[in-house]
Length: 196
Image (cartoon, rainbow, N blue to C red; front, side):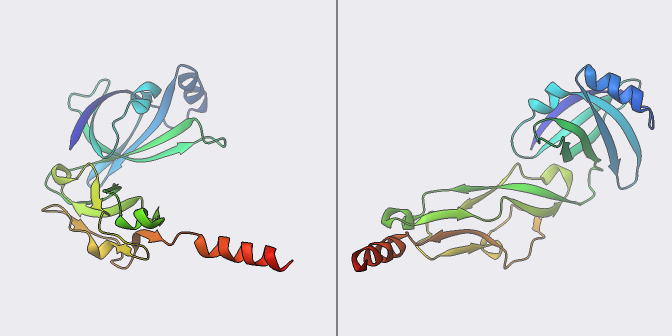
């Protein structure tokens, strides 16, 4: 699993004027919480968030004035009403050796054989909730869809997680499906045109 470092500045809770000042300088308020840890409040620079890796990663959060970094995962990003500017971040502080539930991205790999006859691949699930210790959190869950034919459905129960990782999603949840080509609809349209 990837591990990165973010530098942070302590934040005073309840001071809206302070938050405005820091936002003007390009900083984003951060809330840090976790089981067995005291909540903490800080700011990080927006470029650190923008340059984050894809998939799952651990963050060594170095808050100014603190000796030890807090090891966290990115839990949530809140955006403005336009959806283009992050305005608040939630980080979850982990404890090594203690399991936690985390949403991991799903990556579909391979070309379904149903695509050769005009089928269309639809991905229904883009993240899967897993339970594991921090060091075993996978960057992503790769799911092979090359065997899917038209009409085939891939469920959560069909996925084999990495060692030490348990999938917490409903086994019947659909991850991906190859739907039939829209030939029948076109044929129906042509037939109705002929009758008019």
